[in-house]
Image (cartoon, rainbow, N blue to C red):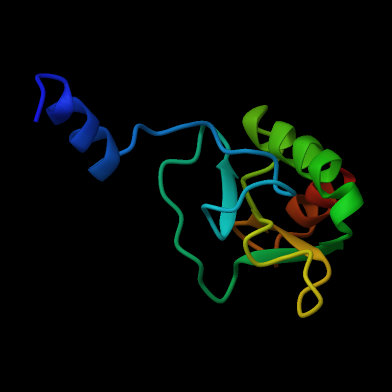
Length: 116
């Protein structure tokens, strides 16, 4: 074992984190997620609003880019997108993008999220 073997073993066992690939190409994760920078914690409950959007593999990267950008800018609270690991196959031909808000009973919040 050479002098450089230890870093190679460490990198193999604990690979450095990388930026995720677009959903249509990501095969290491089931979901990609993005939260608003203001979100400190989130726990789903009976008031949580959740929108599930079905997207074809051809359109998922663009759709996720727009929704992810809205989360980063603070316009949306939280979103997740299925990846190529479990989508785009015969069994699951489409991707799912989920968008969440704190309170589905808050009409103003629901309307605001829908317009984003």
